Image (tube, rainbow, N blue to C red):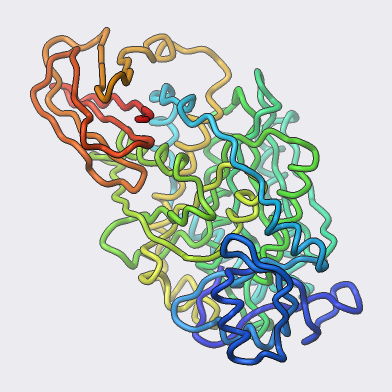
Length: 482
């Protein structure tokens, strides 16, 4: 991801594979951005086709420098290898398939054990290690070596944990010499279902190639993933669904790594049930801790709703409190977009509201020192990653708490929420209904353990209802109002 007021991006590919030049490239971007560039220089861009606010373009990458105004992250476009690929991608975006109501919260004991293990020092050490490459730009030897070293680091962790079932592999790309890294924890019951957490491992941009420490963007994301892996291994996590952790190559020059992986998965009809992107996790620029990027064109509103449910269940108060809000990129700003384009549920929890994020990224000042030599903010994202992976993939062994997962049931009929508890003695102290933008839509207090609540006035859509009993226990459920 990137944040620049002046320059961008791309090196690619016209004439020779991995050629670094100002030759024109094929890409997709928002139509308004394509038209903005055409108004600046009609000889610098050709709009090949437009559909539903997206355009396939053939453009001089020098012209795209003008996209780098304001607080723009990411490359600003998605690289495509040729005109056919660019046009096809905007005309045939795959419909999303989701079963968000099947995502449940049942793994309290295991999740809470993991949350207590998060270590800030570990995260900081990984950030410093990756900063030490000076640049991880995708064509630089140090950038290519960084990918190999991340692969070796993850493999060493797996080997030390005696987990022969876990694989760590490199993904070879067509449009960059840098490799992506994919770690796979196979599912014990439904291995064909895949849960993915990822973040890009490259740094820099077309202008800042030689000195691009990228401590926040995105050493912090890779450190978040690495600490998540350490804890899952320490807890001998054996999920029901397959879990994959990915370090993507070449995000900064057009989401190249994630785009090729997601396209490959779609072509193989792989059943990816949910994806979370961790790109910049260590700068707290807002009054709240986490901003869920909520661009409807590029993220799953339904999956964001599950994040709200997780946060209300695990992080509303106490030692692991995490505050949150929503924000918007307004364009294809990180690797979650590649998965969304293939019809997969994708989400992007970000370090701050978009305009409040780290002002030093894509400069020589994107260092651990510039973030106060602290990784405290990233610890919250490790906790999010743990909750996300464990609750969607589930723990393979049946445990006592699984048997009480039906302690609260809800149903919707005729604009009424019908709820019933098999566990509560006495009354619920409170009930709150949230929408996918984390807005409070309805509040009630002092409710009987079973009853009916009117939903009249709420628009159709997905919601989370949160009940709290007198002992402070939280019960969350999703429902669809239609």
